[in-house]
Length: 198
Ligand SMILES: [Ca+2]
Ligand SMILES: [Ca+2]
Ligand SMILES: [Ca+2]
Ligand SMILES: [Ca+2]
Picture 1 (cartoon, protein in one colour):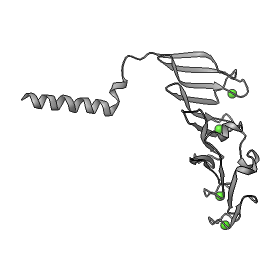
Picture 2 (cartoon, protein in one colour):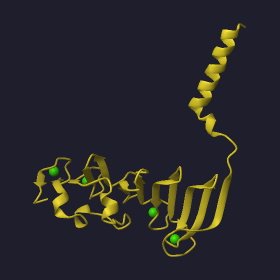
Picture 3 (tube, protein in one colour):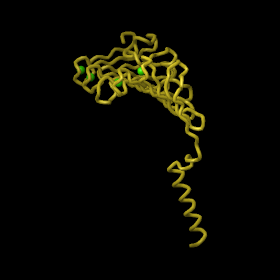
């Protein structure tokens, strides 16, 4: 086999390893802290990789020893939180975060057992946000509310994702833009209310 062919094979091998992420499989140290206490004072477990947190499992409600909140991190920054609000081992709330500033940019609420979010609040782009809500559980959004605000708006107004339903209750009216309603749940929005009527 000539030299060029060997170089080609070596380069292909390195490329494949790179694609598969083998470069990440160095000697890492994984630790489990079974007696972790969160900044909020909740007890639970923390998994660390090379001393940096990757996951936390917390008893955030009831102090009953039962894990009800899972937090995930990337490079030490929080990316996701998932809550089980009624201890049935099914996630009821999922929150996703912008790692650049820690703000919540996507919120999902699960109201039934079909594992599809029934209510979402999402940062779309620039200063645009949207809440979509299937209020009668038929799988079709019947409440579609648009509002404006920076990517930090949910964090700025200290929104508690475990109690959140209608975001209008929490936002100043100056941020409201448009509310579309499908009151008869036929899949067609018959009502459009721009601000100030939204
Ligand atoms: Ca608990
Ligand atoms: Ca649950
Ligand atoms: Ca619906
Ligand atoms: Ca309708």
